Image (tube, rainbow, N blue to C red; front, side):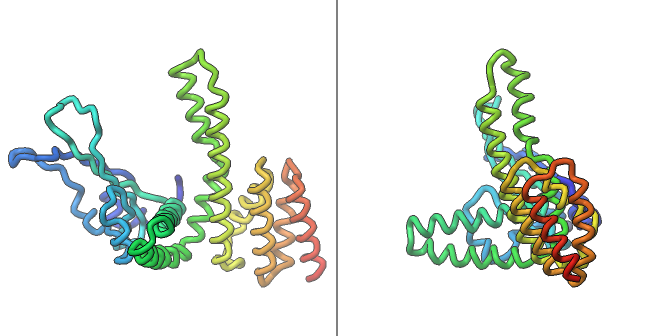
Length: 286
Ligand SMILES: [Zn+2]
């Protein structure tokens, strides 16, 4: 996922890179040379103390660079079927996340804690409350990242079928004579659901963005999503754009810009027509 992260300039993030993996024998004897993450990665920590509680027994967790705020996903695992049956190797990795991915992980943490509280009650309810506060602290920080998140979502929707296309390629390669239609169709539906979920996140973050500071290029990319084949996506984008025009100080100017781009779309769905109508009203009202 491409986006301009502060990690481009952060010395810690530059050293660790986008992905790093190490491997160590579980019962390492003293003459085994232990692999470790670069020292800079010590500065990647669980984002806040409320979340420490949530991640304490998990072998996957969210980390944040204490220097620039970039998020990482830490994972620890022991692959089965090792060649050396007498030794177990522990793998550890850190993967840089986009701010959109960080939002999704935080949302998931809160959801997991909520589900457990609902199922077991008692101390899990306290744990949920602490997790919720921890997630909220990070979500407040993420509001400042709305340009990155909106751009991540646009990129994600433009490439929404990457997963099913990849699956199709793999299946054709390894089992060329079987019919894969239903598996690919199932993955395509999942891709659509993810895209709709992401667009919902986009709409949320767009509200934190002062309309006059949204670059015109970004507005154009948003309008272009009105040509998407998914009706839910088009509806969310239409409503989000209407809110942006309404909240803008120069309603008329923004409405004319949006009108210009929307009119040029090759496919004119009902949502585009709806937006055009609203744009015209804003223009004539100014
Ligand atoms: Zn950093």
